[in-house]
Length: 120
Image 1 (cartoon, rainbow, N blue to C red):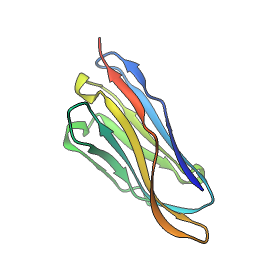
Image 2: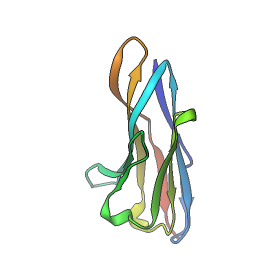
Image 3: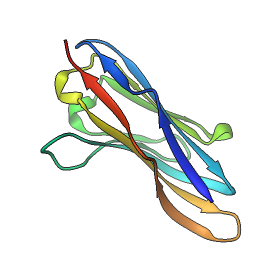
């Protein structure tokens, strides 16, 4: 069984920073791409950032220059450093990852999400 667990969410004032983590655990053979999504009230789920196994990254335009996605392959963990946060960044942030499970092949897994609230 594979699990993705996010952590690091919370409440912060506009202009502040947070660092989210997404840790994969279980009978993992390898982790391909990993990604962060967010769901804000009244809006569609949005892809925020993604990173491949070799470190190539991609961001939605609204977070470019403010957010940085990274990963530690040895720990099967992805991070999202969020700086200069704005109220419109408020959302539940979830991670997903394409994971190859030993003996079973590849599948897409999701974490449970972590709340980020940007408010004064």
